[in-house]
Amino acid sequence: MSDDWEFDDFRCPRCGYEPTGWYRCRNMRCDDGIVTIGTLMEEDPLWYQPGDPDEICDECHGTGIVRFCPGCGAELRWEELKDQVEADDVYE
Image (cartoon, rainbow, N blue to C red):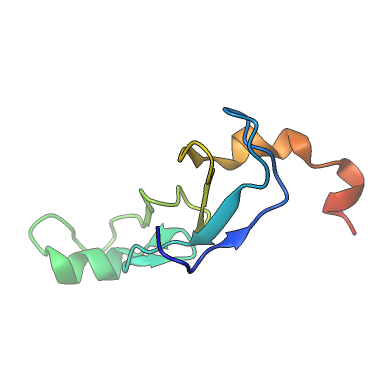
């Protein structure tokens, strides 16, 4: 793991380590979680054609960032962490 990540305010739901961390998605084709069809057509025109839908990035799962636990090394999805956010925090 390189040093270009930041701490998050979450506790790992798998091992309990706190705080978790995150970094911007490192997939070069990803643009805030979406891989556009134009990029895919340039890389492999036999598999992708105009009109094909854009794809969700496989690395960040459409979020643009990758969350992880420095304790156990698990990659964490937002679905595992969102219950730690209080409703008031979302709208501040």
